[in-house]
Image 1: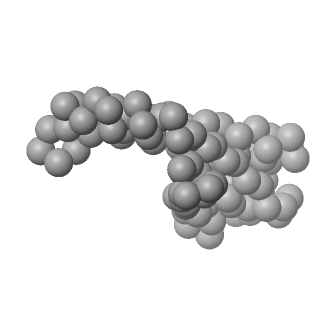
Image 2 (image 1 turned 30 degrees about the vertical axis):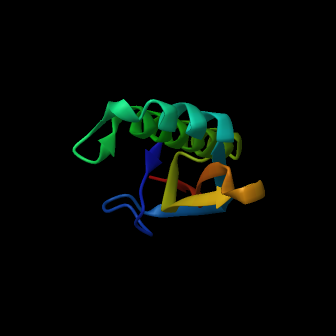
Image 3 (image 1 turned 60 degrees about the horizontal axis):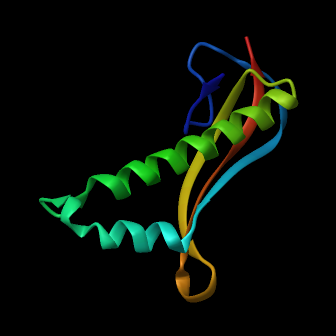
Length: 106
């Protein structure tokens, strides 16, 4: 599956637009407490454990995106937008969401 933030894929004309597809992943409040409890993991202002969990959430969201496009018969996704939002009561959760347009190319 070709995935890009651009509206087209150079050298591969889009033959069909199949619809908007999305993927989401939410990190819960317990994760934040656990990560902040392990603050000693922070080196140079960065938390390796926190970054690892965000990376995992982003990978889950992208997999959901690709699965949704595959279900529509797409072989590419264009115009991908990636967003991070704080959600839930008192902002206790972080949502990673991605969206794009499922297309067929070639």
